[in-house]
Amino acid sequence: MSRLQARFAELRAENRAAFIPFITAGDRDGAMTAALLERLPEAGADVIELGVPFSDPMADGPAIQAASLRALQSGMSLAKVLELVRGFRKTNKKTPLVLMGYYNPIHKYGTARFAKDAAEAGVDGLITVDLPPEEDDVLRLPANSHGVDIVRLATPTSNDARLKTILNGAGGFLYYVSITGVTGTKSFAEDAVKTAIARLKASTDLPCAVGFGIKTPENARAVATFADAAVVGSAIVDRIAGGAGLEDVVSYCAELAHAVHTARS
Image (cartoon, rainbow, N blue to C red):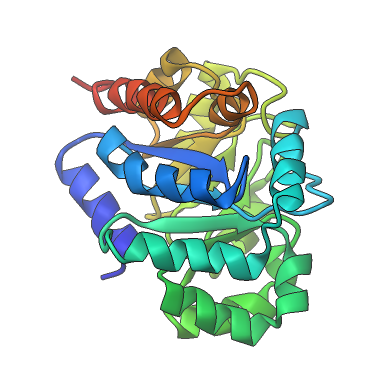
């Protein structure tokens, strides 16, 4: 059983949803990311989503675009992202870690080499925003051969035919994009997302996570009542951009985690 499967099985047995914080690798600098990776599990992170900075992050709104720019200016690269993961795994063998990013850096690194190195570093899943299901064999096959899941995205515009394609080969969990837009720019409509998650759950046994639009602990709590995970990115990244220190960011993540973990109690 993979780390992602094991974590979601534990959560299902406890009847609670997962809190998944997103941070961009190298945002402020690599030392800040390493410290956050070390502290996020104790703050309540069930899975960690680590953004790989890219110069053209088309699915991301202003907050994460700026985070990518800060990270690239700090010297972050895909190879250094994997170094951060290796460092994290020296002390944490249990918390699943998923890389979210774009295909260009992976292509440049070498897809087969990347899949092998990511697995050896301790990566559990990959979200590659601009690599559609019809084209992702180039990454999915080598990744799967090393035990790394390809996490796919579903959106409010994914009809039944598209959903069937999305689910064919998906692993780890299904990531539902709650808005028709980029990260951090809109608030989601709770009733519509709840209906969408019910539809997804009728089509797959994969855990269903919700992201893109969760801005507050109250948002996270609401999502956790009906989804398997709540992903929070821009709201955390905004704090880093605003100059918050490590303890402030960890404290905010603990607040979000508490909201998610107590949503069904």
